Length: 191
Image (cartoon, rainbow, N blue to C red):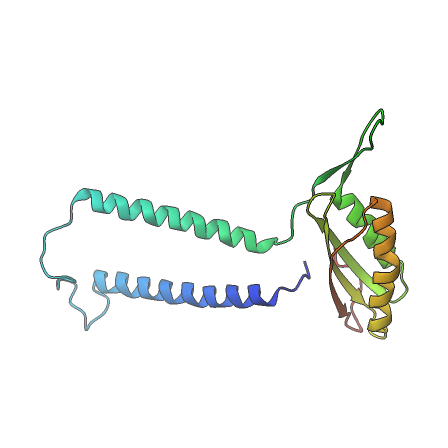
């Protein structure tokens, strides 16, 4: 996925550095315990007193560490795909005999095909998020190296997005658009 989220990139970088520092501290602690560090005596107590804490303290620490580890794993997995999941929208009117269910992914793929039909577009990806009454559109468009980006942006906002709004029968559609240039030698699609 080419969707840029610069604050999230900084977030992951800082967390990776913090994680590396914690791993290094843990490795040093294990090396000191094993006696691999010459200047540290493994027999020296870390805290005053030699009595072990009660058993329940160990269980609380282990449980807390396990919960924290699972929460960190959940956060890490959420970083791989930050866009919302597609939703099933019901398209029905008063007094109709049936109903139509449309996936937001299907509507987004129609918009993607529309934008990719523009001559100056090399690739496009779209996500529709939220309920059918108030969806939000997220677009990532890769333009040809010689494309007029202002004209392309205007074309997307003036042609493609209004066609989608008419098809979905909605009045207003907030759009988050990321436009970028393809490398001159790049081939293929974003998929």
